[in-house]
Length: 81
Picture 1 (cartoon, rainbow, N blue to C red):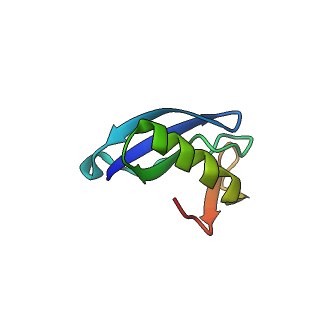
Picture 2 (picture 1 turned 120 degrees about the vertical axis):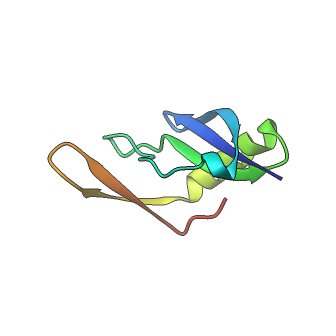
């Protein structure tokens, strides 16, 4: 199994990129409108990564909380990938 960072644009998964655990760092994964920008999944290959990300995108429950004047924090609940 490999670790993939799958990007989203308007709810559509694209551009899976394999990452190493040592390269993983926390960063904001939602834009200002609350749309998910990326999702990390474990998969055998890029095609499977896109399938898993698309499937789990539907299952995510996002809660946006106003963090400061210009930014939001997103909290993922019931996350399975």
